[in-house]
Image 1 (cartoon, helix red, strand yellow):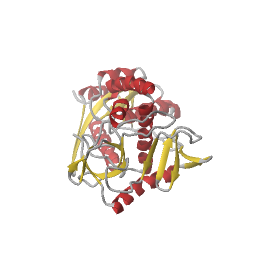
Image 2 (image 1 turned 90 degrees about the vertical axis):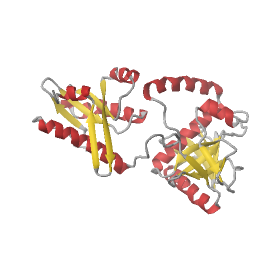
Image 3 (image 1 turned 60 degrees about the vertical axis):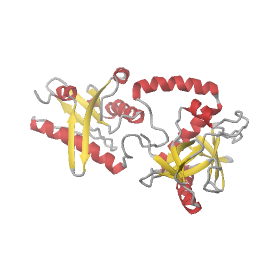
Image 4 (image 1 turned 180 degrees about the vertical axis):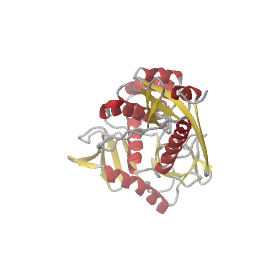
Length: 330
């Protein structure tokens, strides 16, 4: 169930929240001829004060969407700032896109259909919002993540303006959903709270430590080979018949899976003695059979673990298949 968001109406609070987003964009934006761009996201933007135009045209002639600081705390501006019950701030945008050289005017219902985005649950002054609002980015994330989420939203706006591209993307999304499950939208919390870098480090550390304890009790080690440049694998395990190369991820999002597969592919090149190891990606949960099969074709096997952290109490367990693979237990 998605969190309910309260649209900000105080102009000072609106300005403070928008400044967080603006600073992230300006911090990572680089000059490109007469415009700016986010090089990692390959999105161009033009800024005039607190008004930002985004697009994919390096000449800056055809902008996809504008994200501007609201000049009033009502539903009249197309951009808005909101907070949830925990105080987490978000930049929002209505699905209405003005007519330009790229498309006719796009209304929110068409925007929702073509982008696959769902409106956020928004209230204003305690009453349900009358218009449809979509999350652009959560604002308590690192600047790089704010930029990435913003660029993703801009890409969705491009789909809204291009029905052919939207239809193709919808087919691709359906296939990816079969493999990875439904992706998060605009940094929205769904199911689990936002995991900050310290929490990420702790989860991975607890999983690694539990596995090390199991191996130690069996008279073996969880080795962590390290390259001279600082690259370090999560684990190398030797069994009676083979050696395993292990990469641990703390989420099952597509980006985590991609990163894990990439590391398992690159590390044997950097550390040649790992070349013949069986490559294992360890995820927090059981992935779909379609995903398992697709990744197996890359020469990587998927296995799962579960972790529950309640204050200082930590419980980590591994799938039976993984324990058998490691030669742990009966």
